Image (tube, rainbow, N blue to C red; front, side, top):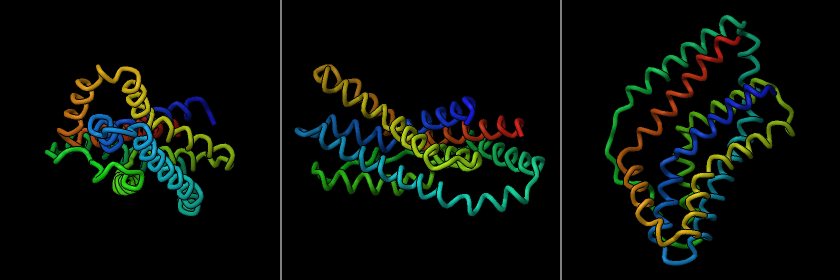
Length: 217
């Protein structure tokens, strides 16, 4: 796989770091949980990563059945046209996503290991349906027809990048707990304003990437 393709996947992974659920739960646990913050948060993040990682493996093993006939049926010109249309729809649609008020980021009903596992599973199940960057990355990997041992570490790395901001916030909170409350509350307020902004940015960049890749076919 070329460096350019890996760079595109890296950009998509960075887009997924904007997940309102992951950041929202992270900030809430750090602000509200009285004890075992690290254990609770790492349990949640591990659940999310395992869910997305398993989903990625499932898609990688199954999408060839869907993509191979399509790839054989389409020539380069047709494939380019499809990518241009889809990319243009996402690009234009990103500016039209309505801003909506929400009741805030998802919050655990209780601070226990079981509750955090349940929250990680349910939020991942809901958000995976709109995980445009992740699906785009899976599509790129599938189109390159990589061997299992080649795409598996890429998916693992993607998911680790996705939770990097949460890990950084946890580390900063451990090191500078006394000074982190104010910044964390600002982050919480930012992510509570709207859930549509992250989706619009994801649509914008995925559409842009598709348009750029269409020129390379």
